[in-house]
Image (tube, rainbow, N blue to C red):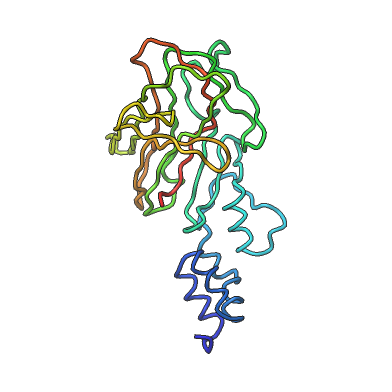
Length: 257
């Protein structure tokens, strides 16, 4: 294949994956040159970037732009939504800040405080002071996502120094609210916010590399032509006891492995 013109090699590489392209650069000098070409990496960048997207300065090649969007999520216009790309496929990922979510009593300082923490992409996170009724909901327009891709939504959180009231699983759901007025793909489930789930059916959180925990709220397949919203929720409203100590970062929507 080293006898092929470089543009032919680049065309072949553009039909593979970002991981394959990076591996191929070790084959030979001509492969390395083709693997670095903008023509290849344009295939892995979205054809349509979200509203409010502005490419970071100082990235002269499309390969550099791709890996910048993989490693450094960008805040969009309202600063409550971040955009990034999945490393293996280039599919779109989003994270909704706690401020972008509907939190029952979230604006009442008796129940929730809005605080700033270091090394977070958003200006504020939500700290639960105390509630009996816990209900958190987020919605995202499904057209923002990559076509023909299986996605999962993850609640991202941690604990302050005195958590209480979360020993039992809580309810999670993910619903596709289609523009056709019908509700499709309702996924109710039980999840645990502690690593001791309390029942065999509940999913447990995992610790991320950034020091936060995440737990899946549900998953869905984004088909070409889908119109509507994905609604994700977490609630615990049936047990009459107080809950406190949760620090909410947001909800992340990304392709499943």
